[in-house]
Length: 166
Image (cartoon, rainbow, N blue to C red):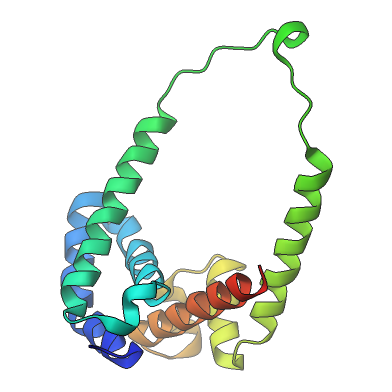
């Protein structure tokens, strides 16, 4: 069995090979974000606390993520035909969607507010200011690995916060 700390250690030891693996298959531009997604899925998994081989678990999540990505791309390439508005238009439950979106935004903002200061700063620089990890590294004078650490920590925290409230 492995603790959350064991998963973090496994992630750190597997990070370079994971970046290379995902970079070859999805492109170097997407690799860093995919690595973050892999860790977020691993950290939020129910299985994370009882892993025997966390490195294999992380690699499996990466493969599954690539499969999901390929399916999404395949689905996005589907041709849609225009609808006949008189015949096909359906009234959407827009009001309830707006309420759900507002609730989710409130939960998200609340989760971001409860992040430690440095983690929140790194997260907002990446997600709001749209800075790359390298740009954050340059501005804050911290290593890229530290930027990744703060992003992993923020994403996991926000996921837990939102899941707990729903």
